[in-house]
Image 1 (cartoon, rainbow, N blue to C red):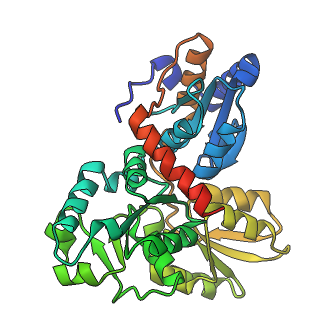
Image 2: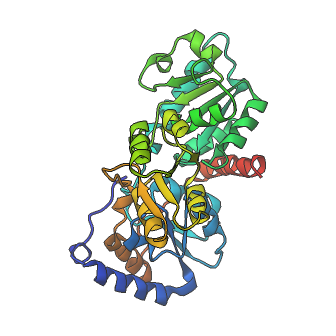
Image 3: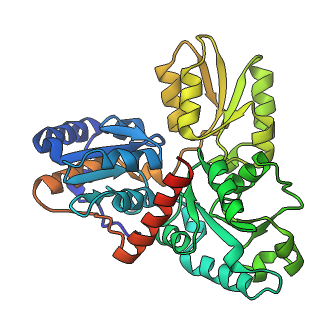
Length: 366
């Protein structure tokens, strides 16, 4: 989305100046304001957060503060949408930089998914009433609504196996978007063959680049999307880590490719990665396949453990990085003056069906 240019006064702020002004506004606004910080956020932003977590945890954290008039989400656009869906209308959700999107979420849009559904519906041998759509929470609100309207559910990287197993009890196939790797890793974990029971839908090709026979046979139709950060991790990086650090344990996010997940010792969500490393003994060695800001923060917080990122090139989430202290300062000082900037509003109909999908996830994965 388009973000208006930052006024020069804010662009020229040093980090120290921005910090002081942010804390001043936080103190003045008190309980009227809550700031949410995603784990992948830079340290000089997340230190101002009242809550830290992954996208779904933060959306729930926001709902735990009914006294807050303003929820400032230091994350990316789909996360702010989820917070708006899960909070009442009297609370306003703000994204400090509207240009902070998600490349993976952008790999599946509503027009493309509707076109996919239409093509599947026209195929002999496929009944779309028996296809259950499942969207990763890392998706736009209108895709969550698409899923909610068609009997499907949302999933997180933690509960994807439960959500997908439920979906296959309701129908014959799962259409999983936007991340093919989470979908594939989840299917394999549930015992399905990635070669014979899964196919990838490329939205830029007729029938997604598949034959009618492949689509009829598939249990999983996986959208051709991926996380640009987690796609960087490789089996060779794991092999190099094991060579450099004898006794190292490798933990990766399930947005990584299947071969990487298989080569790792453990895989799980951001929250899982944090908990398993925090629970390890002093002296433990960890090579981690996820975003560098989180890995560096863990290394700093746990100096008695050796914690490194698998990727030697150090790849941050570039869109998350667009939330800069200067943007946060600009946002908060506008709120203090009574001017609401960058409010994220999900339209009522979209909000309704997206909420249906999210509530279904809560029921299915309880």
